[in-house]
Image (cartoon, rainbow, N blue to C red; front, side, top):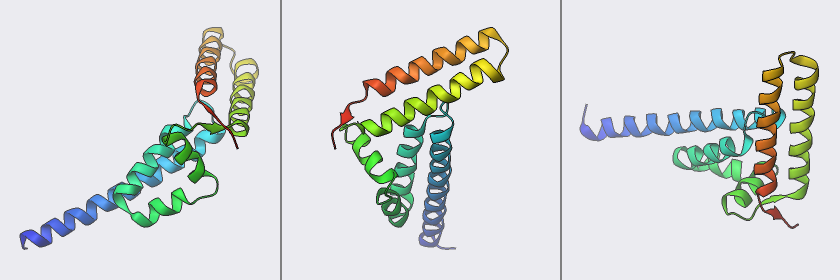
Length: 133
């Protein structure tokens, strides 16, 4: 096997690994929309970075996606996130945490941990610049 051929195989394998990682991070980001303790934004940014290195087609599809593309671009460029996204994120966060802390978990220290985490995430969300539409 020639050195050029080995390089081609490594390049294809590397690209496939980046695509697989991007898909994995995108899935985690989507799950994070519904599970407030799983951060959505870092996973979407990781997915975009992996796709950019693995496949121009996958990267373009993600960045042109109606839901994720504008969010990733705005956050990545430091412009902020839309008010509607902030409100939705906070409502989902506190709805899920409140249900978990008061109905699903009966351990007081664990309830306190959940509420502290939710408070920290809320502060982070509120500190992100609000994008004016």
